[in-house]
Every structure is written in C-alpha cells, then in structure tokens.
Image 1 (spheres, rainbow, N blue to C red):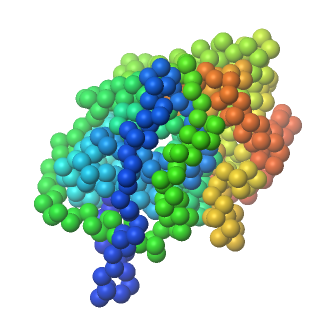
Image 2 (cartoon, rainbow, N blue to C red):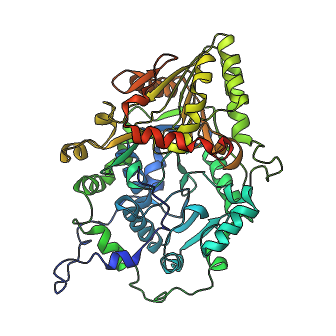
Length: 508
C-alpha cells in the first residue's frame, strides 16, 4: 500500500493548482451542492432524548460509504461543537470533502477543535496556519517535536536521544458532535478507509454511540486537549498565516470540493442523500439501546516511559481482563498480530480452559505493513501451537463486493487490494470490542488507544455474523502448521518481509 501520511487538513495551494480548464469562465460549483438544511441535531434527537439519558444507543458502521455519509450528516447538523481526534487526516478526495464540511460548520458558528498526532503531519505550514486562523477552528498537535516545524537534523536528534517519547503517539480516533453523538473505531480520514481508493482499501469498522457513554468520550477528548502533550500550532510555528484576514480565504477549498471533476460521482450521490442518513439509522432496527457500554481510553502520555518500551495502559488492562474472563469463545480481527510472551500465555491459558479462539489478520498478500507482518511471520508457528485458529485475509476477498462501494468496483477493470484494518473482538458471543487497539506491542505500550466495550447479545451477534463470513474460504485462508499463504505472493515481497526481521517487535 502507498503510505498515506496526515497532511494537515487543507492544502489550499493544491486547490489553486486544480483550477477549471477554462479559467476565463467563473463557475460556482457549490451552487447546487450545499442546500440550506431545515433540521438540526437537537430536532433529530428529540424523539430519543429520554432514552439517551439512561442508555447508550449503538449502531455499528460496517461499510465505509455509510460511515462517510454519517460523519458528513453530523457536520451538516451540528449546532455547537465538533471535536475530532485522529492519527491520520489526509487531503485526498475524502479528506478534502471532510475539510469542506468542517469549515462550513465553523462558518455557521460551530466551534471546531482538531487534535492530530505530530508524526503524521506532512503539510505546508501556511496551510495549517490558514485553517487555524478561522475564528471558530482551533488546531492542536499531539506530542510535537518529531515533525512539524523541525528540520531533518532535529528529527534525527529526537529519535536518537529520546526514542520512547518520539515513538509514543496518539492513535485515538474520535469524532464528537455537540457532545451528544460519537463515532469511534478503526477508520482514519482518507480515501482507503471509506472504500474510494483505486489501489488499496481497508475492511474497517466504526461504531456510532448516542447517549450515556458519550460523556466519557467527551471527558477523554478534553483530557487530551488540555494535556501538556497537546500544543497549539501557533506555539510551534513562528509565522503568521498569509491572507488570514481575507474573508474569502476558504473559497478555493469550497469550489474544489464541489467541482465534480475532482470527486467521484459515488461520493457526491451519497452526500446529496444526507438528510435521509440519520433517519435511516433510527428506522433500521440496528440502532440498539444498551445498558452497559464502556469507553476505555489511555491517558495522554500513557505510562510516561518509566518501563522502557513496556508499561501497558488502561486499554491494555481492559483487554487482558476480557481475555482472562472468556468462558468459551474469543473471535478477533486485527490487522497486525505481533504477540509477546504475555499475550501468547494468555491465549494458551484460555485454550487450556476450553475457550475457542479464532483470529483474523492480514496475509502477506493483503498487508500494508511488511514490518509488522514479518514479526508475526516469525511467531506464527508458536501461536498456532498454543491452540488458536489463525485466518489470513485475502487481498481479493469476495466480501469486498458487499462492504466496499459497489459503484467503485463497477468502474474499475481491475481489483484493488482489500486489506484488513478492523480492530474488533467478540467475547462469548455477548460482549463486543470496537476500537483503535491493534494486537501489537505498539498499541499495548507506546501509542494511546481507545476502545468501546459493548455488553449486548444483539450487537455481538450482528458483528459476529460478519466475522463468520470473513472466516470462510472466499475471504480468508486458514493458516495451519502445515500451510500458510505466503506462497501466494511473488518472491520479491517475500524477500522484503524477511529483511524486516531485524527490527525489534517492541517498536512495531
């Protein structure tokens, strides 16, 4: 997969380079794209407001298109605030549409707070400053010092002199609107997380949360926002945004986002159906009201680096407890499967007490991370010997035709690679975990992570239904002591994976 780095939200310069071919003709591309909305979030939630006081509404967002449209609908109907926290926020087609919606919300008076991790920022500083100059938009950078505003020598010095701090990243992903509605899960903001990339797309999973548990998500976001680790861009960059006083400084962004030449018709069609999005969710029967939902988030800075590359965190502890208390089944999806002696022993003990464990991870053919896969490769036999079942995702999994945007598949005369990115677990068919946590040492000890733990038979059954399909041969290979699917890829990729084995698993 091509590496997509966070490109700090708006590249207005890029927008200016994508002008209509006929520059003599001024075209208002947005005239029919954004219509005046007569609804707002309070009105849409009025009929379920009493339920939201005592329970948590849970709606699993399996397909990327639906997850995209839901975010857009929430931006359109936000009244007071939008708080977003992401590891990656790209400025590809999906990212630019997201930027357009955030700016338009801010123009209506909605307060927008954007928190991003420093290590993935790869943008012109002026572009960041321009966005941050909006009176209703504030951007903070988490754990700066390794990237933004630093030259190559400063970056090298940071990694060589303070290795742990440089590698301790914010992997949380939350999208909070009016402190009432939350989306969290595995998806970053980029084409490949919403099924619109021509080369590589992820099978991922988010969850929409309404009501009681959202208070915990809001608290977590505020803890990060107010943390010393989160620094305003103005404190990092000793520059002033050019054209910051220009009232039309975002117009090029809006016109670029509205120009049909720049965005696939599938995206535009879904956005035009925004008013129906939330009503569809409420009427689907899949919005489940749950008494017991927990949101577990690591604290900013995690364990402070006091234990070398170890140390854990509250998200790690929560998942360990779930595994320890499992009685008969654990069904897991994780894009990266890098185990330690601790996790191997946990799985072995669970199997010995009668728990059936199935794990779906990426194959060499589907992975976007050769470094992580090489470590899994090394321990694959040892894992199988614990008694767990391992399945490896196929790059052309048949399920993509249902989960991915159908229109995209129909327009291409080839099949994009389909990789696994969902981070989910179902325990005993009753408890579901959806979040950002990968089964690897980086999630356990370095990155801050968050997970929603949902105690609902209905939700677990629905998520498990999808997992069962993906365990089947059409979608994955079952790896055994006598067979692994590494042979399904060319020799060059196999050689590349073996060359990565020199890297210590603790940093993968």
